[in-house]
Length: 473
Ligand code: CS2
Image 1: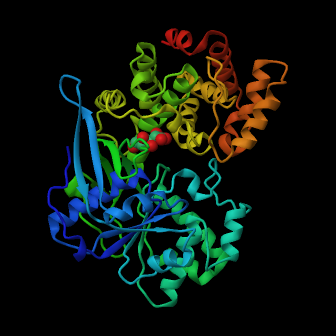
Image 2 (image 1 turned 180 degrees about the horizontal axis):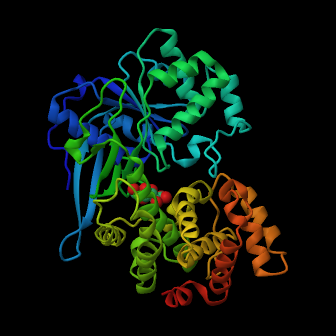
Image 3 (image 1 turned 120 degrees about the horizontal axis):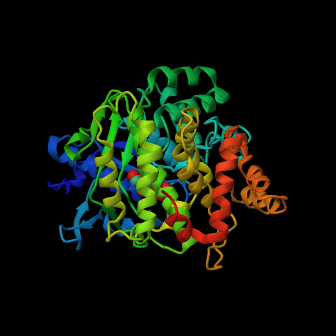
């Protein structure tokens, strides 16, 4: 297990990193890696100032303990017995709660000591159209932030208005480091920041575009949501491939297992398609079947076979020819992943992964689907995953229990689901659902996709998850 060995003197740390979106993931990934780098190098200017964009709960939980918190890494020993390794982290210097004090967040971004502004704001925090990646100019929160430079609410609003202050004060540029599960996350962030900045001031956009850096990065560590906010639980596995393109230096995260790479995109593709693609498939099938956690789901032999076949038969062939992945042993990656999913000590809820499907599905499944169609290859497993998501949108599991759909597009998707129920045939019903352009673009209009998903949807509704999985090759 990667551990942060030395103890830092918190009082001596400077805040070189401002981190937006202080969820459990950042506290289990960026922060321990940064702390390990500082401990190893003695550089003490990479302390992290966290920003919660919505709630005060993390700040309130951590303030009484001086913002120190516990990281509990969990996995299984050689006998399959759960084990845990705990340590206290010290490099989180404070937490700002954006809605309470947006000025303080803007000033943190504009502070002379700030060199990196990092982000884990989840897919929906980018306010972009999931299918195209373009900024949603008509989004009310974006319109609000364009009109209120001193009191923004969104990530893009804070970034651009904070950078405007830096520029006005003649301060140097920073690196904007996305650590979210988006394809080309740095380039995507750059496009969105420049689109927003261009609507504020063309010269500001020009300065950001030429002086600031937006490295792409692939992040990987499974971090379930935990009720106890003072303890972050995570798997011991850690991976981070990040492009070494920083405007004002960076910690040496390699001490904790990160890799600096010339191009992160191939690694992002590998990770999004394999880890997140199979995660989402397991999540929707699991919620429908009533399997509450990933390890419970993967313990079902038919589900495990399905997840393996989804990767081996449909995802891996699309990765085998990607430049930059030539040295990756995909079969070993798959085996390791199944082992990670089977981790008995995490209790990673399928319902948590099932959240925000509209924002996740394009990069997790649809790129693979497009590549498979272009190759004239089979898509049955992906089609079953899609059928599971579409059935999930009905909000009822196989035992008849209702559940809420947690998704920024939930209202539209549920209305569409209800409307589609009136279609004369299953194929017409699926065509209506797949016609939803914000997620599927034009892909959902392709006959081959509609037919494959319809076939699986019929079986899923008629036979249920278990029986359908049993018949998958
Ligand atoms: C998961 C990810 O919640 C989800 O959607 O698929 O958070 C996943 O656990 C991480 O990306 C693993 O690195």
